[in-house]
Length: 295
Image 1 (tube, rainbow, N blue to C red):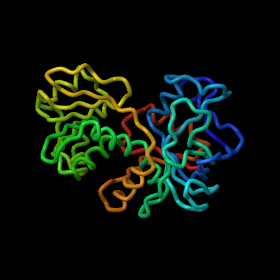
Image 2 (cartoon, rainbow, N blue to C red):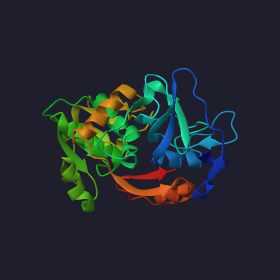
Image 3 (cartoon, one colour):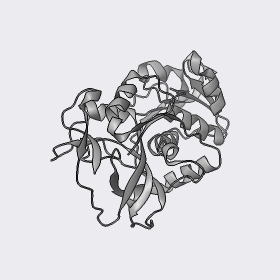
């Protein structure tokens, strides 16, 4: 089968389409025939060598998000069932940017019923990250939350999930994104007030030096990169996200898509063979929604 991999780290040109063996599922695993797989910034980091190489392999796989159909039944999923999953790991021998992928059954969930596979593929990583980051902050209904990077995929999901819980959300983004951010359910700002928010979710990765001062005394702050929580000051509780696969919660997020709570945004689609072009577009930045590969 074909898979997008890197054998030498570098720029978008380092992404290669390799002919590799179809992975075999072991106990508790599910093999998915990939219909669509989103490209995320973490894939660019993997390609560039930020996380190192897959142990013991000749190449490192790419891709965290997958939507497709169960190819080999297992872990309670039937062959042919439409599913989504998070293929976790920054240095793995094979990711979701392939024709088939094997994942742990606990990472798999039924796909949303109201969208196609291309849109469904944008859900797992960013929606789980937003949900788990909000879990770190635990904002109560009626409290205020600032989301940086509000126009991005993670930020957008965080706005919608928090607003659905009764949290008063403000999104920080470029002026050109005001309509988008307001449409997601947040107030809009380009200049947050100092110590003005009960909680801050730094989806833009601005860092504690810039974003922590927007948190009120005794509030909460969450970073979205592991091990990057700033030291607590002014009684602020700080934490950093280390996203984890969770098929049970992913199924609930898929239901929120069907209920109209979460909006799935696709920026562009590419054939799997054009994965290097997708990485080049990713590197340009300014993407609203996700780039999606289709085998």
